[in-house]
Length: 324
Image (cartoon, rainbow, N blue to C red):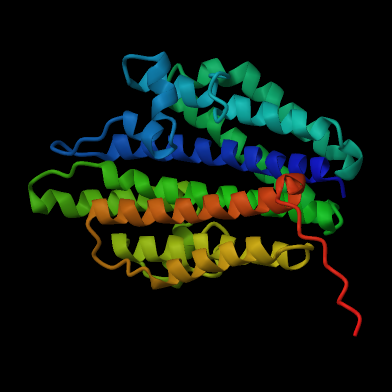
C-alpha cells in the first residue's frame, strides 16, 4: 500500500473519532453543569484546556463563555479539531481512495458532513438543541464504524483505520476523564460527596460506559474505581488499556513495526505501574498528561515508519567481508 493512502486512512479514522468524542465531551460537560449544586464551580474554559486548544482559542477570543466555546468546538473551521472541520477533513481524506472502502462509506460520511453543516448553528442556540444535534453526530459516526467493521476486508487498509481510531480514542478518553479534575467542589463535605459521584457518573455516561461499569466493577460510582476502569480495564472498548491492546494487534500484522511496538509497550508498562487509588486531582491530571505523551510517542513512531519513511536516516550499506 502507498504510504500516502495509508496516512489518509489513518487520519480519516482519527478525525471521525475526534468528532464523535468532542460531541461526547460537550454533552458530558453540559450535563455536569446542570447537576452542580451551589458552592461548586466549573468554567467552560476547562474544555478548551482539556483538548489542548486554549492558545488557539485565546488568539481569536478575549472572552471564554459558553456560546463562544461551543461555537469554537462545533463549527469554527479555523479550529482544525472542531466537529465540522474534523468531519470535513475525514470527508476529503476519503474522497481520493473511495475504491478502498465499502461503497456506502462515502455516502454516509458525506451525509454526516452535510447534516453538521446545516445544523451546527442550531447546536449553539440552546442546550436541548445542542444535545439533539451532537447525539445525531455520535449515532451517525457509530453507524460508519459498524459499516467498516462489518463490510470491509480486514486487510492492511483496515489496520491503518483501526490504528488511527484507537490512538485517537485513547487520547480522548483521557481528556474526558480529565474534565473532573477542574471542578472546584463545595467546602461542605456533605455536599462534596454526592457532587463527585454525579460527576463520575456523567463521565461514564459520556463514554457509554455506565452500564458496563455497574456490571463489572460496582453498583455505586466511586472516583478511583471509575478512573481505574476507564484506564485499565482490558475488555471495555473505550478504555486506554483496551485501545493499547488493539494498537498492538494492528502493528503485529504490519511490517517494520519494531519501533512503534516498543512505544506501545512502554505506554502499556507505564499505565500498569500507575496506582490510581485516592489520587488528588492535580496528580490525576499529571498521570493523564503522561498517558497523552505516550500516545503522542506512538503516533510519532507510526508516522515515521509508515508515512514518512523517506525522512529517516538511510541505513549504512553493508560491506563485503575481506577475503582470506
